[in-house]
Length: 509
Image (cartoon, rainbow, N blue to C red; front, top):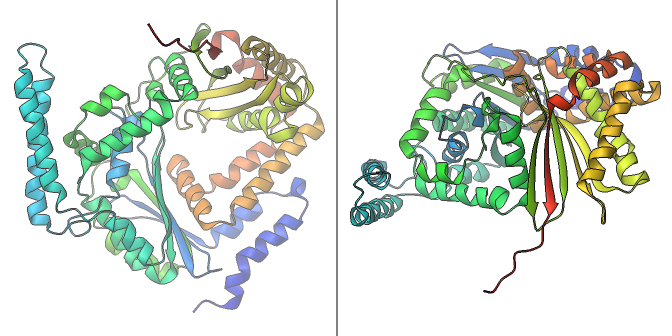
């Protein structure tokens, strides 16, 4: 049993540190305290396990980081990373089925029928439409046969019935993440479930789930002007790097990749050497790590996939996309910048805070409060990801009677201030103080902390980067801000996307 002193350690530590003057704090204080409670172990199969003892409540959270996101989608198959995220909740040969032996035969028939249907419908010469219809019917009949064995959402119900909370996952351009929380006495159940779903996933209801993703695209992109604008903006900004892909997939791609394609993606990227699992909460490292290794160690050892991502060439001229929509006008621009491991990453973080952090930011005060040009104005880093060189963006929505061109001029005026005038001492210090306070507050939640530690371990090879990044921000100078602003915010490095309001299409003849 954990002692009472141990159970109050972290809340007390955070309260004490929050009481100190934030401007004077060194993040190494936090880092050294965390080092006492964190163990990192690479299992023989290559999976990295990070465990942090935090016994303040009898629960624990985890975050599994898979170093594969939409950037890794094969050419012509955008959306596969997202599809496997959905498949990871469908169960295993023992979870989610009434009779796996029969279901497996039925699922094999589904895929064979789909491949036959797909081959015929994609023919450019000699396609027989009657044959296509017959093959489609056979495929859909096979799906109906396989569905009779499915126990819907059994994986999730097992977690909920055992006190689990916040079961979820996400797919970004850079990675896929899985997480939830369980009571402390359910650690072995967690290890079993997580190892099973990645060791032997069953791709049941694949084509039904593909339709679900199709609907997500319709809601997020096809039916949303801002979604269409962002899709065009990213495609214009990235000519070679796969950041130009729509992470959810285009409509054509979602209609054309198969279960076989998804299995190939899983086999390549869901290998232990490409995964980091961080666990934070009421766990005892001495007993938890051997237990976790017993289960997670069953994942088959495979080589880590090579990152063969095509780099983006230097942009040599301004690019612009204008979309006419019967909607609110919007202005968006972006500038290429290095990835999050660059030596100037902290400088970009400082600039993002100065320009965009809340009601004290320059963009809000100038465009929204003072000039009343915009109803919203902000900027930010790491779009559409941070693992590779990405974009620093500025975004604004004009006020009634104002135009995107007025926003463009106002934003560029604020950018020129960054390039030609030093930020004030007070402004720079406020940024650094906020960054420390935000980090300290984020440490209080087990799930957020597991994600931060796991992502840092995966991206940088060391969880301590969570704290070192703040220390690097603390060293940023006014000269650094001007230098980076001048080298980044140039016309030749700029991509612009605008929605101009168009009259609604007229109905009738």
